[in-house]
Image (cartoon, rainbow, N blue to C red):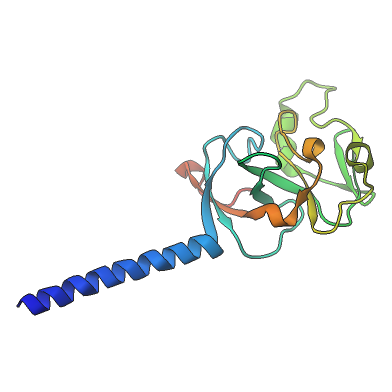
Length: 182
């Protein structure tokens, strides 16, 4: 009887330990939960919103990513605007990448909330704010969706691809925001 009880306890603890190891491996290599702090991605992501970040796969233009903040012991959540080799310009609240205008539908609500005749994003060229004409190899140019308050590449220039933790794939809290951020 005692032998059966010990075997059952060992089996239970072995299963529990294996589950913990598997969860740790998944969290370290595949995905991780992250809490958004601040309003720089509002309304797409709100302060204290909880998201799942995928650590595998390629980063594409307009993906929302989490990365180690330059010169700070923190993480930032921003949208990828420029990929390596891209030239960028914002003129009259329109984003131009490699000379072509791009729609930014995720800015619609923020643009609607500003005074008529005002701009959400001030005019700039990549060269004016970074000294470079194109985004360097293994780097990204990132900006928050709440452009008026976002601390982003307009201030700290480019981020290294090595600093990227992963891509935001799912918002899970609050439950009313459950789903893929746009």
